[in-house]
Each structure stands twice: as structure tokens, then as C-alpha cells.
Image 1 (tube, rainbow, N blue to C red):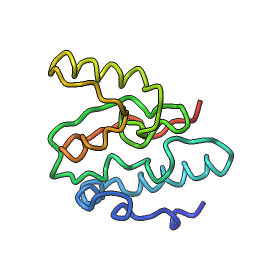
Image 2 (image 1 turned 180 degrees about the horizontal axis):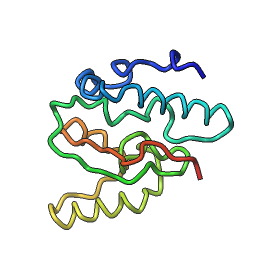
Image 3 (image 1 turned 135 degrees about the vertical axis):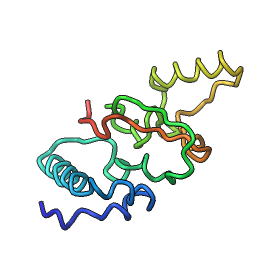
Length: 138
């Protein structure tokens, strides 16, 4: 795998994040090469490659809250690159997300959301970042 085939950070994430992460860009590129090699050798890596750095698509200056998860959901179709978030159509919701929703209901009295799509949270300044950005399916 040629590292030249890996896109530059400013094409993969918000420009402010690309600038902030510039000192570690070689390591990020190396991880990209490694992941491509894993996929080419038959490993099913989640989330989809276009979502791996999705948490960094939120403008750095707009972040007010950081919610850190452990790693992406290992079920194909579930992880979308944001911690605890799923595609809107995923049913049943993961237990970790159900627990978050229970806390929201108990603490704030809000109605339980019907979907696992937390994208609206990101537009309000919530960064949903997993400690580990990828996982092998299963």
C-alpha cells in the first residue's frame, strides 16, 4: 500500500482539526495504510472507511462538550463514526445508548428519543469520540 494514496488530513476532517493534528499527520497516515492493508487482506473493519474520522468533521471551535466512548459498535450497520451514535434505522438500540437515554429522561425529563442518530447533538457542539476509532466486525 502506497502512503501517497491516503488523503491529506484537510480532506478528511475539519480544517481546524487538520491543523491541530498536523504534528501527528505521519502517524495518522500510517494508520490509514495499516487499515487499508487489513481490509485488503479480508478483515471487516468498522465503521466504514469514510466514517472513521467522522468525529473530527465537527469544527474544533464549535465543540462545547466531549463525550468519550470506548470503541465503535462491532455489529455491521451500527457504527457511524460517532461514539454511541447509530444510523437512524438501527433497531434495537444498543444497550449503552439506551442507558444514556434513560439518564436524559431521569435527569432532564425529556422524552426518550426513538432513533440512535445523535447527529443533531454534534450540531449543538457535542463531540462524540471513541477512544478507539475502529473495530473488527463481530
